[in-house]
Image 1 (cartoon, helix red, strand yellow):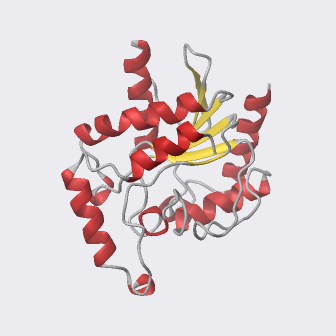
Image 2 (tube, one colour):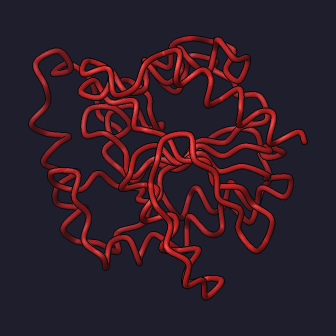
Length: 226
């Protein structure tokens, strides 16, 4: 890993800017789920991971309470991540269909995964000040990915907050409408590709399917190499 990105990740892990989130992480890490009661939770902000030469970035809103907050890696150890990595493996982005923990030797090909917010918020609803506090981390992560071509946003909330940051950055007045498999091109050439979130609810109600997600990531790969 690039030393600058490593230093950024250390800063992210040690961040305590948002007292409400620090308190909630402690609560989640002490009042564990029954199936995880014997585990030691990560219990800190969760940095991104992946290939520094990535052309694709996959962006969620925040780590899951008993997923990333438990394992220390985004989309790792929860059902959303199980579905996501199954699809990433089928399109050749991940070397494994499962993402279990930091020691599982999972590797991503030309792809970086992170969240806009590095800490899990109560009820998955961050405050605007918390998004603002974390936006600097997200912005730096993206800047370190010098070959980045495509950002895939998972879910409407992640899409809205990602676009809000870029609208402010580039002073864009255009209205961006969330729609699955929709693309937008930013002034700096980056392409935003929006996707439904791979949550159990969306999968069970068939709002998103494995076929749809695979199609979307194949599109992301095409856009990243075109």
